[in-house]
Amino acid sequence: MILKKNAGQSAKRFLIINPFGIGDILFTTPLIKALKEEYPDCFIGYWCNRRVRPLLEANPRVNQLFDLSRGDLKKIYRDSFFNGLRQVLKLGRDIKKGNFNICFDFSLDYRYSLFAKIIGIPRRIGFNYKNRGRFLTDKIDITGYHDKHAVEHYLDLLRFLKLEAKDKSLELCVPEPARVEARNILGSRGIQANDLLVGIAPGAGGSWGKDAAYKHWPALKFAQVADKLANEFKAKIIILGDETEKPISETIINAMLHKPVDLTGKIKLELLPAVMQNLNLLISNDGGPMHIASALGVKSVSIFGPVSELVYGPYPDTRNHPVLKWDMECRPCYKNFRLPVCGKDRECLRAVNVEDVFTAAKALLS
Figure 1 (cartoon, rainbow, N blue to C red):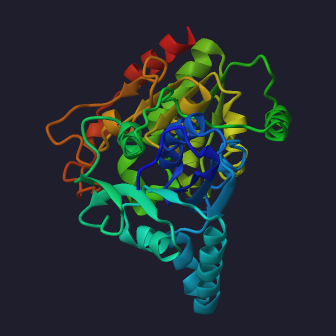
Figure 2: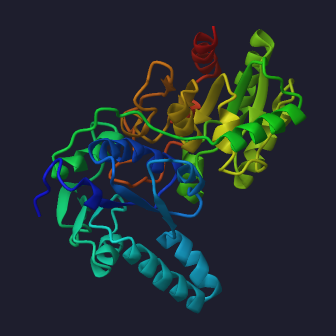
């Protein structure tokens, strides 16, 4: 199929498929911007997982959302096979009604492009990883993401439409009601508009599951940095994380001399960006909050261990988002979407010292 660059814009109906976590969802937003800039009247649907849906609901460039990933289905099937089957059939009907003629499949899983083929999407663009792209019509062969940021790998797929992105920045829209609610939440905990506010996100993202601990800088070091910032800048500290990260947050809180505001497990994802917009600085591991900070223009300091900051770090602004790391011969060890068992007890993370993180934070706040 040959697409004429400026003809028939209203006929363009794109489906974006990305079942992954917060960072991966935000990584697709430059591609979405490029599509809307080239085809202003196009219709864009987005097939994501249920956990990250709130990040897309306020995006004016996305016209329709479908939120049922393989991971979501596994949980449903565990409770009821027939309910799972009903939801799959409904998903198929709903996407088919969209009359999409092009999909961008970022799943790296042949089942999504097969599904797209079965429901009649004629052009399916994506990555061929381990021959999982066999149902794609246009594909780039990859063994993993290397040598450049994941966003740039994603944007490479635009070549099949003879397009190039002009604006590669991440995009995250925060609706006004969420902003108001966030201010009320912070105000109820004694945080005023003129306070210097530092967020600590000591987790590593729900999408990593049991492997998230491999990306955790030690909790006690977060506590030490937070206390130093509270001492020197009179900063108020808030701890951010989901319900599963409460043990990490409790370790930090119990170790701190200046008691922080603990929002762990108390802020849903639909409110997290609105809360983070009030931060002067975020200090975090490699994870979703770091990418939210990048998309919102909130300064950050992040600590990276097994994952390459070149591929998965803050993007595109690195000046206001310094990365702290300890380079070793085996780092980064997360390659080709695989994380090996660490034989050095996460030395690459433990070796990042408190003073270096504090110095980076101080430079951004001064």
